[in-house]
Image (cartoon, rainbow, N blue to C red):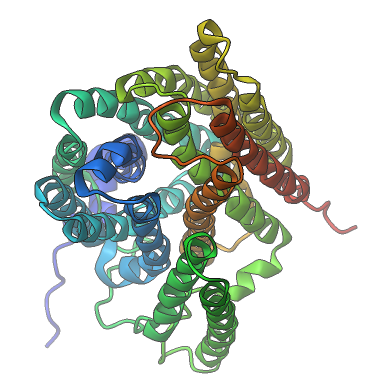
Length: 501
């Protein structure tokens, strides 16, 4: 006797598509957009509060920097778990779990009375943000046709960048009025809305529309451990270069290199065993065979270097304006607001272009504009007070236009050559490399800035602007411009290969 057919899951992908019709893919994109906005806001808005937080807890620059670096390290490593979590628990459970963790981290950080608890809250937020961020690219590449992917990426990007655009402005006012604690609570309403949308719109199914398989492949814990420890060794080694001993820095960086080589060996071995025994074992945390696709390999290089420049500057700009130019947090937020709005508009326009223009052209233009904005920051001088704020606004807008060319184009263009089954892994890997670059970029900017300040006989905590201190910031901006120049080489190689005759 056969069992009767089970009723279809009302929260599964087929049922939701039938309920909402052709507009469902756009509603799904909206749902994940809100959660991604919360995760991105939590990653950037705290930078405005770092000076006040440093004063409250009596922290040096290196320890205060870990509020940002700790978040970035956690976010970087957790991105590699996204494909496994989606396959095992489905879109909705994975997404809801991340939103709850982000919500708890925000509340705990805002109520914390000691710095270790603040740091723990930031790590929790970083873990949640890392799992969430590869999901939108997976949805865009699987739910939308190729002639709609650029438009979808542009609309999604326009919405997401409003969070970091508005965040520092609102955050600066909140810091001035209510103190640094108020910054942590900014993610709470976004998390609540995202949880409500998830119940209505996000399917319980896994990528591809199949049911989530709780008994599926095991997580590659050994690879995850190697990636986590290697990332921490890299970041601590970079910090040790400035504040510690050469021997300690060398040991940590050598350990990071050794763990990287061990990670590559383990992932290649895991992939080989999985191919030999498809129905047992575990999937590799990072599928290294993806790098055989030239566009994906070049896109990964661009993503890593772009992460260094983007997140390094996100850390550097508020510190530059507050500590180098002695502007208040609310003024800093106001200066950054126009560039954020321009970025949103640029992404919407470039998203439409990405469906028709080659990826390498759009990404190369963006990298050039980003490099130019860093170089132009060195033209600001203290003896021209009336020009400082207008120049800051204009040069920030140039950089954000560059970002607007890169953001909708890079992920989509780099992954267009991958098989559909490899898209979750590809999105996870390219986001991991971008965030690894970002985590290193924040540390690199902090270390380089401290070094140049010391070389000019300055300290960051001084409460008076000086030309010597400004020169140290100028040299750090030039470093970021050179790094963007390196990304341009790989960006030009994103050009699709002509079909074989």
